[in-house]
Length: 119
Image 1 (cartoon, one colour):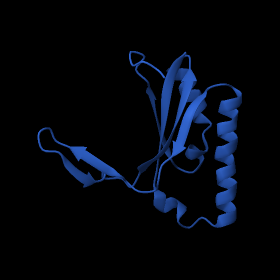
Image 2 (cartoon, rainbow, N blue to C red):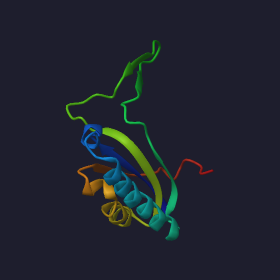
Image 3 (cartoon, helix red, strand yellow):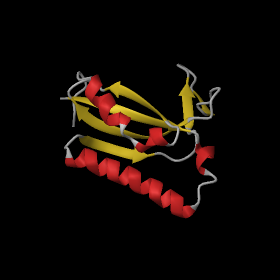
Image 4 (cartoon, rainbow, N blue to C red):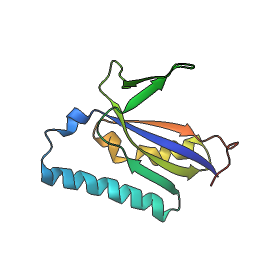
């Protein structure tokens, strides 16, 4: 089976007005979705990232470190799930049920290069 990275993008400002009780319910949806992937033996790993854009390094001989990445949108990469699936269609079908979409997020699905050795 191939591995696919599900990259979850979101606007952190969207969550600023969500109360603690509602946030708990939302978190539980993600926990349940992650458990479903685990139960189906599809989940390889996942992490939520901090709600900030991080740092970007650019350059060749002289490396520059800047805040970012910044684009026209307010979306930032908020986390990822690494799953196993037989093909893109199956990976996208799993991503379709992710709670991120329910709350206006975007999911990028990328296949992991099989030429890179797995640990």
